[in-house]
Image (cartoon, rainbow, N blue to C red; front, side, top):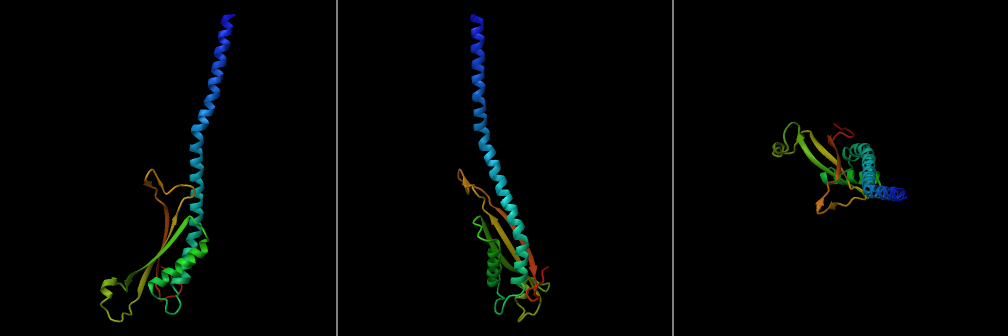
Length: 169
């Protein structure tokens, strides 16, 4: 009888050890699974924002920068007009940061430094408008252990002739 009693004790001990194993596996796998779900969620948010941003940026540049109102031909006003149109179109997304930069590309085949010497230049000029969306991930801190995490950025670049309304190159 002592032989059967010891076998039952061993079987019972083995079953108790196996019950604790699934708890340990759950404790190890659950954080990894939650991180994967969070990354997938943020990636889907980023793709959705990019899909909204691309056509909206093209439309904002076409309507605001290529045909500005009277007296709004300076670079600063074009930047603010395009940026305000983008911010309005993208909505109140707290995880998005939108910036717009405008720079002169050249004057009729001359570089901008060569064309500066020409008085009252009537040479055609082009401007490069860069619309940038910066995505701030949801639920993820900006730095971990003192290491700052990079943000996802998406840019669209447009070349325009400011004196031809509605023209994009």
